[in-house]
Every structure is written in C-alpha cells, then in structure tokens.
Image (cartoon, rainbow, N blue to C red; front, side):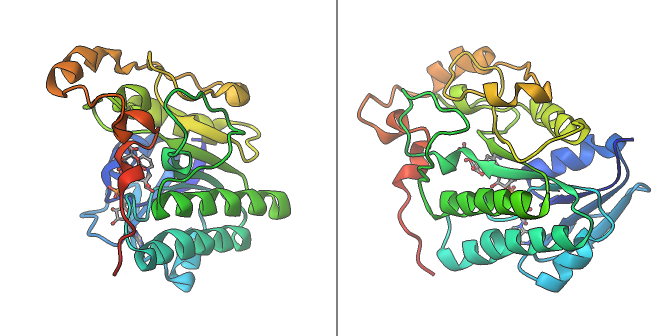
Length: 266
Ligand code: NAI
Ligand code: 15L
C-alpha cells in the first residue's frame, strides 16, 4: 500500500464519496471526515465528524495520517463569513495540523475559479496570473498561497489541483473544456501519492478533452496522463443546450457563470 492512513475530508460530498469508494486500496486505513453523516464505517475505515473551522479538532483529525485528500469546505460561491470559516480558517487549521503532525502529503482541491476571469480563448499554464471570479475563487487562491508557504518554510508537500468540472458526464458546453472524469480524478490522486518527490506543483485537474484551455506540461514529471475525453458528450450537449452567443459571459470567461455571481451577504 502507498500509505498507512489516508484522510479524506469532505467525504460526504460529491467527490469525497467517489474517493471514499475508490481509494480504499491505497492505504491500510482510510479516515473519512465531514460535518454531515457518513453512515457506517467499513472495516478499513475510521469516521471522524469534524468542522474544519475547529482548530483543536482538526489537529486531532490529521494526527496519525500520512496523506490527506482535502475536499472539505464550501464548493460554490457563498457569503464571506461562511467561506471564511470553512475555506480560509479551515485550510489554515489543516496546514497547522500538518506541520505539527509529521507533514503528511496533501492533495488540495483547488479550483479553476482561481483563474475564472481569464478568457476562454487564452491557454493557461501553471504560471498564469490568478484572476479569481468570486469570494470562493479567492478562498482557493488563499489555499494555494498558504500551501506554497508551508512547502517553502516547512517542507509540507501539496498538489494544488485546479479541478475543472468533475462529474459523471460533461453536461454543458463549458464542461466540454473543463470536464474531469472520475477515473481521471482518481488516477491523479494515486499519482500524487505515488510520486517519490512531489513539491508543491499547480496541476489543472482536467481530462484529455478536445477543447483545451490549460497546459499541464510543467507536471509531466508526475507521469499522470488523463485518458477520458468529453468529446463523447459533444453531440448531446450541443443538441440540449442552445448556443449562448458570443456576448454571454458563460461563453467568454473560463469561470463561466461564476463570474456573474453577486457578493452574497449574510
Ligand atoms: P461538495 O460541496 O459536494 O462537498 C464538500 C463537502 O465539504 C460537503 O460534504 C460538506 O459537508 C463539507 N464541508 C463543508 N463545510 C465544511 C466544514 N466547515 N467542515 C467540514 N466539512 C465541511 O463539493 P465537491 O463537488 O465534492 O468538491 C470537493 C472539493 O473540490 C471542494 O473543495 C470543491 O471546492 C473542489 N472542487 C470541486 C469541483 C467539482 O467539479 N466537483 C471543481 C473544482 C473544485
Ligand atoms: C467548482 O469549483 C465547483 O466546486 C463545482 O461545483 C463546479 O461548478 C466547478 O467548479 C465548475 O467550474 O464547473
């Protein structure tokens, strides 16, 4: 096995459920965590209910783990106070816990919304300037910067994975460029934990789609090659979704409709 104990945060969410189901073989023990009910523990599992905003509880959550898949937190635009707790204090608590508990390697679920205000006709690599498209995107920029600092200062290794759109299928025109299949997501997680040396790279979490906005050439050393392609959904998407026209922000910006979200007040 690659790991002794893998922690999956956000294990009750869309991607957390997939990881819980499909990563059981990579560690002796899988510790799954969320604030929602996670059901019964399988024999290889430990269930820990924990709010990421609770500093002490997160320290205990991380203790004893040599790998973390961090999916927990707010996953769409929301009010600043909610994003502050779950995504900003949450990742600070996680990295403090990592620093104090043997520096487990971290797969960080960042998001394409850190670069959402780049245009769809731009091709971005790992060095593209950040252009977040909302408070959610800004919280993911914070997570990326925090991880970078904990790497430079304390040697904590993190894969900063800017996930595109990870769902069973590509269901709209934008997803033809942003889709990350579950198979490719899981294989990326495995490559991240298998790598002899990881560092703190930015990785675009996207399948091998025909429409390409993102360039992963800086992480070829990891050996990860996505194999799925959203093109298989293209005809259905074009039939189901009318052409938004060239002036619709959904067709202009990489972040799509997130660029149009208002600031949400409490
Ligand atoms: P999700 O919203 O389905 O799951 C997130 C989980 O985090 C939920 O189960 C929720 O209960 C938990 N959570 C929220 N606040 C928490 C707190 N304070 N303490 C502990 N747990 C808390 O999101 P999904 O789609 O599974 O995404 C997983 C991660 O990947 C998220 O961080 C999201 O931002 C990121 N991501 C996902 C993409 C996708 O296409 N699904 C695209 C880009 C990024
Ligand atoms: C995200 O960051 C969100 O978590 C997810 O709900 C999707 O909307 C995805 O980005 C996307 O851009 O499609």
